[in-house]
Structures are given as structure tokens and as C-alpha cells.
Amino acid sequence: MIIDLNSKSKFDRAALPLWYDSKNGSKNFLNTLKSSGAVKTNAFTVDFESNVLTIGSREEENCNAEDAITLKVEIDTWTADFTTISVAGSNVSVGKKVNFALEQEDISGPYDEVNLFKSLAGNNKTCNTSLSTCECSEDFKDFPALEFNFNGVIFTVEPRDYFSYNNGTCTFRVSESSQWTLGAPIFEEYLSIFDGDQGTATFYRYHEIKKEEAAQPAEETKEKGNGWIIFAFICLAVLILLAIIILILCYCRKDPNDYKQV
Image (cartoon, rainbow, N blue to C red):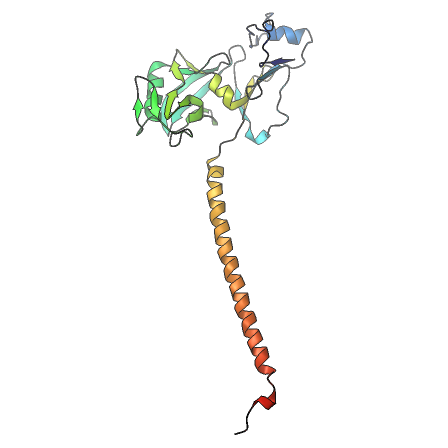
């Protein structure tokens, strides 16, 4: 079952309760689909990049299994227990729950913890705390990631996820709430698969961010430059060697009549 989020029809809009009853004792939307045989799998995939919601299957055939971030979640609420939330090595929160909420437009968390996060993220930057803004570049350079540690499994919220950019100003897409909730910014960054049968949420980043790869082009350029220098020296050495060989050959083949008797 596929729902096209691009559709403009006025007759295909309704709120979908995308949660499972873990006891299978209710007749909610997703449980009913499975019990009626309309779908074979208690799972759905949220693809914001293609604006498609697929119910009844895990749409991960084109994903690299090594890139998967899989978390154990409570399927009734889509919440997970995290060990820590940190920014640049400093803890923002310890030992609580985070909710994944497709319908929420931003990221939210407890007041004190959100303010601590903003303070750490904007450290040594020009920021306006009252407006929740910072001066920045479009690539959000030098801003740290927000890291959720789920018992050793790291889930990263990049600056481009928690900021919106406009003409040199970055505005935090983070608000205050009773608990940590990861909304639309996360689904814009990750292909997300929620599996009621396995009790898991699996995430694949649309465009993988790796600092090692980001530095690779500069290293490759340097290596290529060194390669050309070595090649030039080799060519020069070969030319000099050929010149010496030619001179020796010419000397050895000199006509004896060219010599004068003394």
C-alpha cells in the first residue's frame, strides 16, 4: 500500500494513526490492515525524499545494510531509551526517552536541556539567544552535531537538520516540550522504517556524511600533485640517460680517419 504525499487531491487527506497496538487488542488502523490481510508485514517506510509513505513493507532494497541505524523502540508510542544526548562531547541529557514523530515540524525537548544544547551548539559563535538564531554559512561550517547514544548505537542530528538557513542566518528548528521528540527534520535527513513485528526503527541517511570522505578530495589532489612531480623527474632522468647513451654511441662510432697522427 503506497500513499503519494505529492497528491493534490482534496479527497485523499486524513490523519493516519501510525502506531501499533503491541498487544494486538485494538482495531486501530495499522493493526486492522494486518489482521484483514491487506498487508503481510507490520511495517511502514517513510521516504521524505520521494514524498512516499509505504505501508506493509520495508523499502530498503536499494540501501546499504552497513549504513543502517537500528534502534529498539516501543511500537505503541515509537519511543526509544537513550543513554545520553551530547554536543561536542558534553552531555545535554542522560537516561531518558525520545519520541519519533512524523507529524511534528521540528525537534523538541525539555526547556533546560534545549537551552543547554543551543548554548553548546552556539559556543564561540555569534548568536542571538532570544531569537534562537546564529550567524552562519549555508554549509553550517563549524557547528557541532547533536548525538543520541542508544546503548552504543549513535544516531546523529547534523546542523543542517536542527537549523534552517536564510541569508547568513541560521534559526534553530528546536523548541521546548516535556520530552525529547524528533520530528520532520529527522525524516528529511533519513529514510525511516518502523517495524511493528520486530519492534525496531531503522534509519538510512539519504546523503551519507563522513568527515573522512569530506577530506578525501584535498588529499587526492595532493597525491595527484605529488604523482605528477615524480613523473616529471622520471621523464627528465630518462631523457638525460638517453642523451648520455647517444653521446657514448656517437663517440664510439667516430671514424678513425678523423684522428690526426702526432
